[in-house]
Amino acid sequence: NNPDRAGGFGAVYFGETRCGKEVVVKLAFKDEFAERLLQNELYFNEKLTSSIPPRHGRRWATLIGKCKPPYIHGLPKEISSSQMLIFRREKGRTLDEFLSKDISHLEQ
Image 1 (cartoon, rainbow, N blue to C red):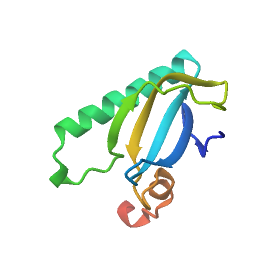
Image 2 (tube, helix red, strand yellow):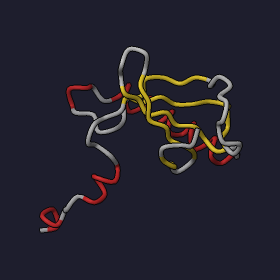
Image 3 (cartoon, rainbow, N blue to C red):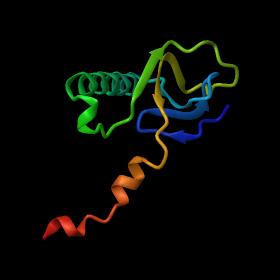
Image 4 (spheres, rainbow, N blue to C red):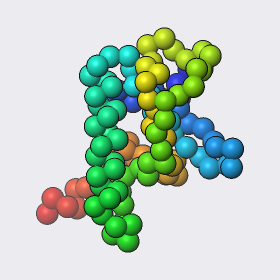
């Protein structure tokens, strides 16, 4: 299947778990740099999650888990099958929204 989006280091797919939760799945491209970026995202997400309590309002995607993907028929050949990260899909909270938000009021 074709990815729903292209991320900074690989393919991004949107899906749903068997119990109906919406998820985002990230897979790295087949190159060492992309795989390192995926590992860095995993590391920083785990560090942030363990050091900042939920009551302080987390502002990053919630990592649900990671795993080695099963053989997926039709996965683009440039995508690595070494590991995938699975995040809870947050409605209406994308990086594009944050980057395009008007912040002129903060510059005063």
